[in-house]
Image (tube, rainbow, N blue to C red; front, side):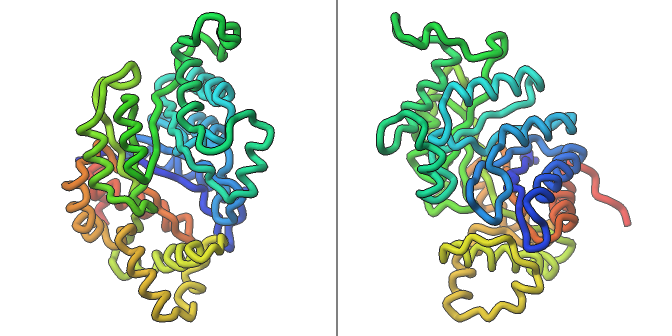
Length: 339
């Protein structure tokens, strides 16, 4: 069946502080490495009470060091927050230390609010507005060394210079990102779990418009989906309640740690709240493994992804690990456990 991977936000809960959330990420990576998952990507978010991971490159090194088979990468580095040379150096360094196991996913959003984005970028030279394309071009030039004659960067080398950049992936939730990934001939990962743009349109657009390049000869599309699996539909729905309340609060601009199931079940939802949760339900796949696969099948058939990247945000760490175990069994990565 289709390969499975993990997108991890290092989720902070009302009982799990950020430092513990980072340790949970390392534990989860070890867990899925043994289950046969293909990749483990870390996100970059800043000033969010529910996300403990602002520096994916740091976590990549930690996780690659304690796993054996996983490809480990950024999902992704928010390129406007960083000098392209710094990104090139850090990921070439990771590739040198863990050859053939590193991925460089790039995003064009800030991954935070406006004030934090300004704080991140205030000392970086650049023009006003969206300069993602310029930064992406510069990043690739550190690899190809195609700077114009006489350009001052011809005298600057991204070290270690005997190591290539790892594969580059463009991340997105819109048709712009799919179009760009196709035009530059890079891998593409679509964020179905929060996108308002139609996933089918983005994924098919990427495939049909893809142009072979020095980065990739054929298209490769990853579909990132939010899944919460448990032994029964009822238990999965119970676990999902904290995720649903957290998303409801985020839609209102309340960026809080993930609440407990008990808090979520006791919350005084209004009819409007329940309607909002129902609307968001189309971006969350909840249930037993059989139910989750049944719900996913139409989306997989329509988007034709080469790989599913799963984000599972639940309050209890062991329940999150169990969700990934159940999916691994359901998708044939490991044999089903016998009671």
